[in-house]
Image (cartoon, rainbow, N blue to C red; front, side, top):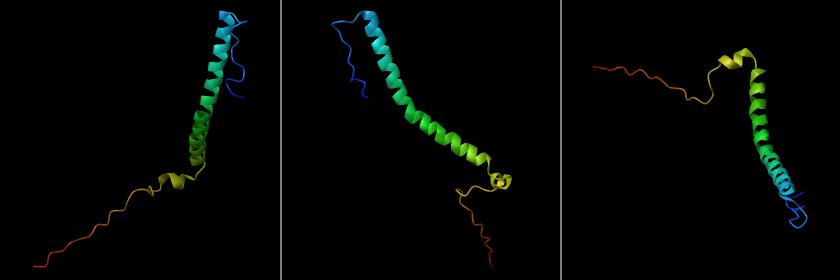
Amino acid sequence: MSMFDKPFDYENGSKFEMGIWIGRQMAYGAFLGSIPFLFGLGLVLGSYGLGLMLPERAHQAPSPYTTEVVVTHVTEVA
């Protein structure tokens, strides 16, 4: 259902009815706009909850995204 399926009838409506119609259109648009936001919020909270279910050992492990620094010892030969 599109927002313009039932346009406001200017001929038979009052200002109050037009205000109600505008409010309903705005509420419907807010509902449609909240769907992607709530989907993204659900993904973030779902991944956080999944992380809480990991064993404690996984929380203390080093991050796989950091690079390991290779330390080389240079010895000078005189």
